[in-house]
Length: 164
Image (cartoon, rainbow, N blue to C red; front, top):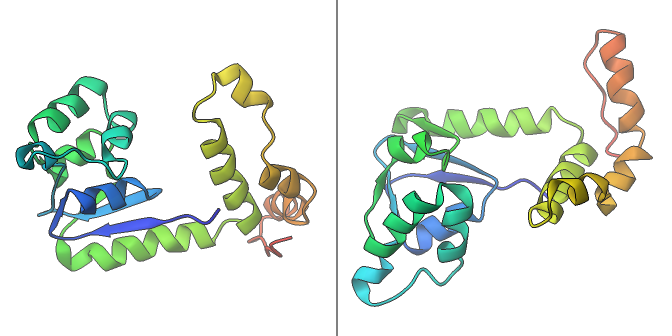
């Protein structure tokens, strides 16, 4: 249950976009073009793109792109919430590094529990999701990190995560 960040530069068409859609965070260069052009070639986005895109952006927008193969600019993808950040190419690595640093500042147990909890409950109604306790969340609740975080906050210091 580790976070996966997509660093997108150039064209993310077909399989490239499908790989990015499988990630947790997407950071794109401002010149990027994203899309699923498979219908223009007599295919479908069969590596889960046809299923993932409508779950990430509004249904009608997704279907418009899926049925026509029309691409999206990086700016449009950002506006739709498909990508987390759009940067000039020269700043792309710095932006990805900042996301990595922010994740590394968190408890590794909490990060894993968060990802697993979110993924395990995506298909559930909110009331059922609320009662679901993912295995990593059970571990986090019993972890040293669960005590360290609030303690560090109250002591106004940076936490020292043990990962256990």
